[in-house]
Length: 136
Ligand code: ZN
Image 1 (cartoon, protein in one colour):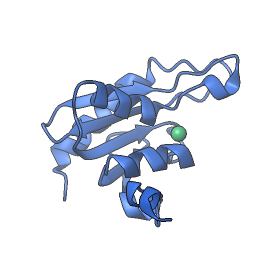
Image 2 (cartoon, rainbow, N blue to C red):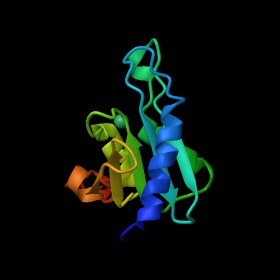
Image 3 (tube, helix red, strand yellow):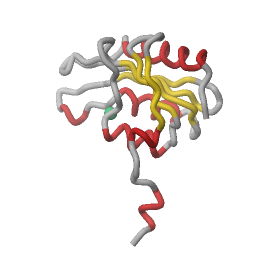
């Protein structure tokens, strides 16, 4: 599945907007993410840190969670924006969540013009999936 350039730019814009609301007083590393549901709707998230560090949540998982809460189960892509100096990639736990919901394309962007696109299986090959639960 491919994404139109306009869809990519729209997703990046949503991620940039979400990043403005990041709550990252500890790392001071603001991240915004946005996913496009199969219905074309966009759901965004930012990182939300906590004084108890492990209680913090990544932007990517917050975006997927917002979509899931709205009833979305199919996705066409995700955009992530962290630093404007380098490309921000999802952490390992977020890659697992991206795999769970089969987000096929992951766009990491410095801005609307400068981005890279990865396929889900490139970011997490040999993912742990529900079929693995049935293997004894
Ligand atoms: Zn993460």
